[in-house]
Length: 174
Length: 394
Image (cartoon, rainbow over all chains, first blue to last red; front, side):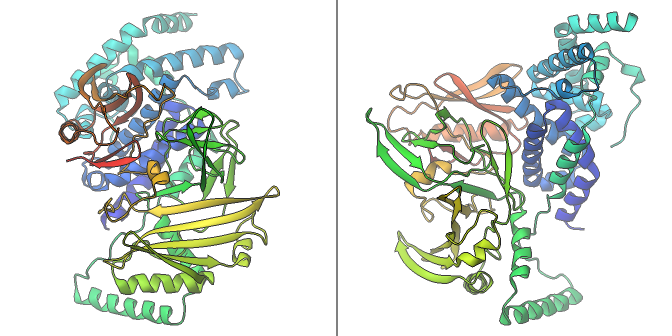
């Protein structure tokens, strides 16, 4: 297979993850579509790097995450946030929706404020469940640096999301 | 991807992240997003040399077949397939813009009113008004735009209502007309034009020599358009322009002007396809964009369309910086005190160095202290557009 076929193959393998990443971050169909388009363009530009990478799917997911976070940061800056999908989901109870939405929005907002390497590292580690070595390969740094990124991200988020976490505990205990 | 056991380093924050980022994609959205990936089928840019005798023989046979097909006039369906393959290359940029009329307002400001109403991704609705100002800024229905990006990976042009977000698809606008966009030889260019004429029943209606470039204008009969577009009528008209470099005799740009009747009025869309993002971007000296369209330039994968609703008389200050740990890592003042176009080469050199050394970080551009653009650097930036002028970073 040539480089292009390789790339298509990787994209086909990763397409559901790609869709999931942009959706989880943006939770808006139009914006997710835009982010995915931007990500595809970046992936095409980086096709050599992607196809020769030790873990192409992980790199593709990182690029999608970057593209989605770029749009999320832009959205936060412009304060033109569309109605979150959680509000339009008729199957949820109103209170559930509010709790979910507020917590999700706050977490995403805080992730968006993290330094980018930290945000990517913690996403790949915690949500995509990659090993530290795999995350390091995707970020282009050492495993120990990656651990540092994840540790600092967790610490920052712990401080900033302290109230949300205490609420979580309350809900869990009820 | 291989997954690791996370039980060893479970952290309270992880649980919260897991809950916040575990949303399942709604089925209709997932379908749409998967389609987006499905549509991504880039075509090969270049012919590759055969590496074996068998390959060489196969290539000879293929060339003979293609030659034979061309000699008996390729059918439109074949040309259409070729075109789709070419358009599917995501590295290409499609620009839509609109024929303009410049008028001077009472306040002395020149306003270019754009006659056609279709833009992709600028979210301009049919019937919207788009104003372009002398400083390069653009407003849709009075609202200033920060950035306009036109990038397509398929052949469907979407017209998005700016306010209501209604997506209306205009299918069947075939662009570029047929064949490979940037032929590598004169023979190939001639073959392209021949295919265009054959496939679209086009007629050469004009030829013009401007600034070292030859422009060929073809006209496509209305019945061809009516068959393809839902908005078409007998009054519709389509013209195809091909810019040919006078020295190399190679086409450097295609443009299709498409006039159609819509809601009782005649509207026009001009589609221009050029190749700034190909391996060898068209040199500014060779390809001179008309002034009024220069600010639609696309350079590499991103562009900075510096627009502002601030007082235009204020001297503009441009700052470019890299973000690290929530702080400005480096801030370079790109203030252009005179003319706004010739920014110091030294500053551009420094910017290029910064982008080389800081891939993965985020570049921010500020205009008069207001952050107007942010982008993750994922490869060295080669060119940048400021106020409609493209700058090669030294």
